[in-house]
Length: 178
Image: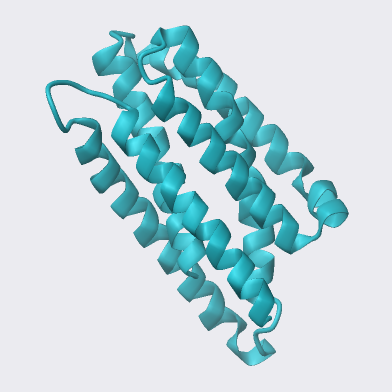
């Protein structure tokens, strides 16, 4: 549940920050901002479509870890190369898309040992944690984006990377206790 909250914190916060950064800081129109985010969203969609096969091949635990590692690495690239301009921002956001592998595997793991009569409750708790994480991600990362003299991806993307690294640790620790 905690990993789900952190996952959505990073996912929705990153999309929010990228949109504002491309529009407000780099001066793209709303339409061009959407076009600039299209490569990231296409790769996320492609991974989501192929995730069943990837998860079957990797296993759920490994899929969560691999997806979170892509998220951490992609966020770190965006933090490091935050001043790379429009093309650089687009290019360095693509590895982040690998985090899409996490969602389905994480949901399956959260539900696998739940008694049948409690599956609705468990699903609701998982969903509530994810939604709360997403809302907090937009609020906190959006605030960090605007911290300082102007908009910068350095701090919010570093926080996302750290959050995903913590999630990897939590996942590994959870695997040991499962």
